[in-house]
Amino acid sequence: MKRRNFLKGALYGTGATMALVGGFGTFNKLDSLKAEATSKELETSVFSSCEMCRNQCPIAVKVKDGKVFKIDGHPEDAAFGGSICARGNAGPSLLYDPQRIKKPMIRTGERGAGKFKEVSWDEAYTYIADKLYNVKDQYGGEAIALASRKGPHDWFFRSIGRALGSPNVFSHEATCPMTRSVALDTTFGNEAIQADYANAKYLISIGRNWFEGIHVAQTRAVSKALSNGAKLVVLDPRFSVTASKGEWLPIKGTTDLAFVMAMANIMIQENLYDQTFISQYTQGFEKWAEEVKDKTPEWAEQETGISKDKIIQITREFAAAKPQAILDFGWRTAYTPNDYQLRRAIMIVNMMIGNLEVPGGYYKTKPANFLKDFPDQAAYAKGLGTIKQPSFPKASKGRIDGTGVKGTPGQIIPAYDGAVGKIVESILTEEPYPIRAWLVHRFNPYISLTESPRVLEGFKKLDLLVTCDVYMTDTAYFSDVVLPECTYLERSEPIFDMSGLTPKYVIRQAVVPLVYPDTKPYWQIYK
Image 1 (cartoon, one colour):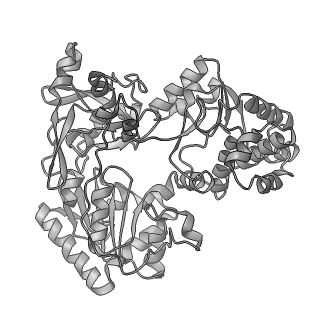
Image 2 (tube, rainbow, N blue to C red):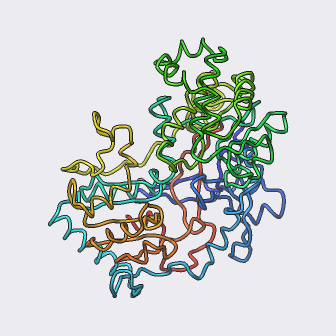
Image 3 (cartoon, rainbow, N blue to C red):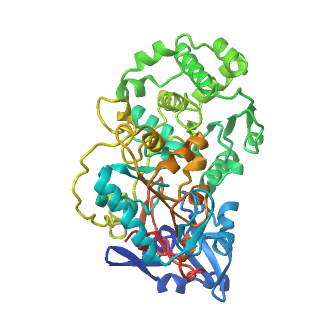
């Protein structure tokens, strides 16, 4: 791989040098990349990465007279083809929205009354520090909970929890994709799995709606597969745009598991599965066969509303396309009580056709420094490593949710993410011990967690609730302190790795100066 191609294709931003100042990244523009821009349009672009969702898509931000006027996809990234979704295209609206939080605020009225006063950062920090130390002195550091959406900010946010002696740091995963990731981990042994849609010959989607969604690279890959003659089957009660691209099966809601188990039943009864793969790489298949032996297509017809003949047809077609066939395991998967078992069943059916680490199937994601194993690319893919974390004493008590503890029901849930809903339960019941302070970053538990009245009841019992966000969310409205974070278009941050079939390093750099001078990037807030 030539250096020129690596810089243009693998790096999203125009900054490739990182100077660590106090442990935080600052970036300079790559003059060499800018010099390669031959068109006037590219000369007015600043390359960075989007953060309107967690996909971190590469972007080219059009800047004129110091202001952002348009955002496109990065023209050099083959997976995206210069495209960006509607949400990503709306980045300028976020940047210049007058309703953004502009200054730190402290509550002055009753919780939920919406009465705040603007204060300086020093006043906000002092108020928070005093409250946190009061909680820590009276109840211990474990009485402080932290919850945030996952992202590049994780390291900084979690360092606060460790410094305070709290084991209770949570991500939003339990409200979004956790059932999928836990199912992959417990069934396949690793959650870092992605699909090679572009080279598949047969795709079955359960509730995914690529063509109205936000994952541009996956949508383009699915489109490529369809252009090459692949068949798409969509199980969805609603006739979505994605369903219009293939064969639509209007399945009854929450009955997807019955359909998948019937597929396994048919594949076993008709000997359609890859026996060599199953015998060499799996354990416990006999128990699975026993589990699905009575999950016949006739039974599934009654459960799903899809005829037995159609279930048999789809299963036979899927198996005939092996190993270049994909039964998709979904996106946001925390919907129903059977979601965990559904994702496990989906992965087992995929293993039954041996579609792992083959073109058109599933593969384990490779980090960017994986390329160092290839002689012609080693010089350009040395691992960046990670910022060394400060050493803090271990928390004196275990987590309130018991996640990650062997021999307990919570052992399958990664303690790194936790079961965030347990925070409210511990606030109200004080079991296994009370939570008295809650720091929230880019997360809106009042809306994201179930039973909003119960969440509000928990808020009212806290000694301190802090929200750090771009907007005045519902949770911020009930908070004691609100901290204004700047947008992704106004901050630079450390380089991070994006694993995948074509792994790469991702750079986010400030595109324009702060629109509201009293906002700050997360790493400066938590420093």
